[in-house]
Length: 141
Length: 142
Ligand SMILES: Nc1ncnc2c1ncn2[C@@H]1O[C@H](COP(=O)(O)OP(=O)(O)OP(=O)(O)O)[C@@H](O)[C@H]1O
Ligand SMILES: [Mg+2]
Image (cartoon, rainbow over all chains, first blue to last red; front, side, top):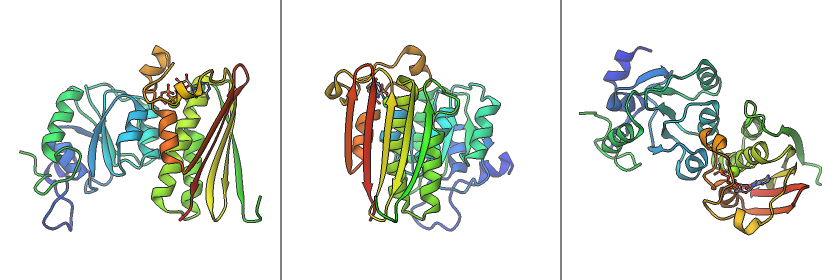
């Protein structure tokens, strides 16, 4: 998987009409770096932004992308428990190897973004629309 | 206990944040291998994870036991620890005694116990101060 490929696919393969944002689309919308993302065409059902993991477990639905300023193994475990589509680590925080290893092991795609949680979540809100995949989303401006 | 019951117990060590969540992850995997519906598995996994994290954060040790029958999935958690002096208060959304260090790790929203109750079809909690806390949560299959 290359970043170029991530940047140019924003719409899930085989979808028609109401296109959902894909992980590639998420990545492009916020200018993130894919640290591990074996399947960029996977759909993002919505977005949840939080630093407290129980809030994630209350708010997120399956297939959501978690945007967080927290970087530790519990973020990955929480994402796996809640069937999330991916984790975006905002604020440009370094992602330690044990976190990346667990992400691979648990099949949780991970992205890193240099911007604040507020900005990152804001861009995703604009791209995806309030936590629901909406028609026309997925093509970052 | 019926013939068809599957039982598996997990030992949880207080303050072991490296392994915290492993038992719930294993429970999730076990239920997946049994072919149960993903929505049901997710509810059980979330409830188990919240209960597991509570014992890691607040108790010295705990045993978490998974029981599966054709009719339901039950998770039973018994810990040795400080207990909960006011269960009604602890069940309130937002109530937390998590330390600053726990909050830095992403805990302390005060949403764990309410979230367990929300995900379970049946939920019971009992506690004795200076002894420990017991939780039983059941999700019906089908
Ligand atoms: N097993 C336990 N032993 C002792 N006290 C507990 C136990 N479980 C919960 N508590 C008490 O109940 C409070 C509320 O628990 P709850 O799981 O709802 O929130 P939290 O653990 O503080 O935060 P969160 O679960 O959102 O990360 C805890 O802060 C703690 O004081
Ligand atoms: Mg808790």
